[in-house]
Image (cartoon, rainbow, N blue to C red; front, side):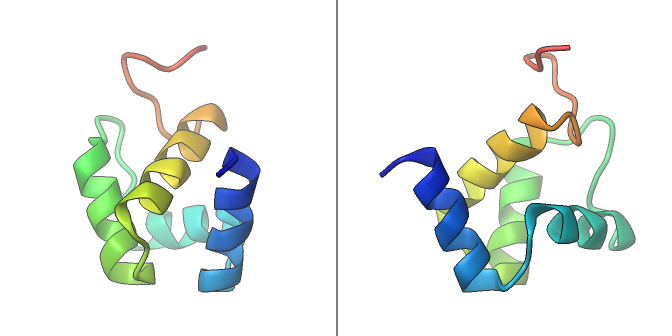
Length: 75
């Protein structure tokens, strides 16, 4: 499955765009400077009932958009 397919399936399942999910994560205090993948993916699994693969795809998307900064982020 391609990354784009993952993202399309996430949007269909949740009814949310990545930006809407980012805004919700911010409102709920989920996003943090030292965010760990498990905290973020657990939130997605609980909030949006995403599976692990889809949650990890969203983690990558957030990093790629620089909405989450990790020591591995490309700046």
